[in-house]
Length: 367
Image (cartoon, rainbow, N blue to C red):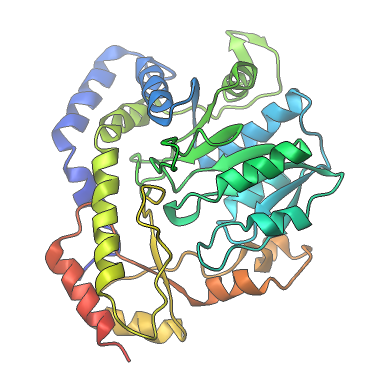
């Protein structure tokens, strides 16, 4: 069986380093917000090119804290509208509704699957206060057009960069440094994945960073002094130590993912398969390699017959979920087409050439 993602093999590369980090962690006696978290926050801020990084418990909490911090700064208030891609994982919307904001769903560009800048403009009104950009599957959205639009309308730009660790635009700026702030998930399957839940917020705004840092820790910036209504959403010390190790090879891992993607793009030749758009730059880190194929279940079963595991990201669009059954509109054709026909192929930095060849051959023989 060719696994969709072999996390055990990916993390086995760090076996000795992880054990050393655990021993140091055990001996340190600093188990919460210790030097490991501080070191990772510094390293990841430097990596993204931002002044600040705040380590938090997971990607969803990173978004929730972000919205709460902007409320504290007076940039947002309950009832404000936030433009968000219709084509995303449900967590992006959950964070918006969690704090009393209203998500406004916008269709994606059918080529990139990312939010369409032209469609964003159609949804801006007096209630619109922010745009959340999701760099879906690891490919940067059209940030130049979006930032111009946001500046023109005095809107916040929040990157949901949970799938795009290390993606670089034409100006050599990374995901995490392309808007007012960015949020990251380090869920184990991500390009930079922890061994459990973890997340972060990056920004160049000192006041915003300080508020986020306090909110994640009971609203406190000084022990037993609570300036905000916060919660316990801190980055785990041990996960920070693991992330510090894996950050060292992130760029190399992303290059390996691009190599796999380029083989797929150049060698898959099947009219039944629609391959993803890629311009060949470093703006895509291929967290996922997503194709479109009609009669998806038939294709998935066919691949499984030949010992190849695939996945679906994501089978049901957020606006079609029972949790959001009051949403309007109920029909978003571009988003629904993607969710109805998408299949994710195996991709990782440790996928062997033999496995890639087998996957390509099997797909080319599909009919």
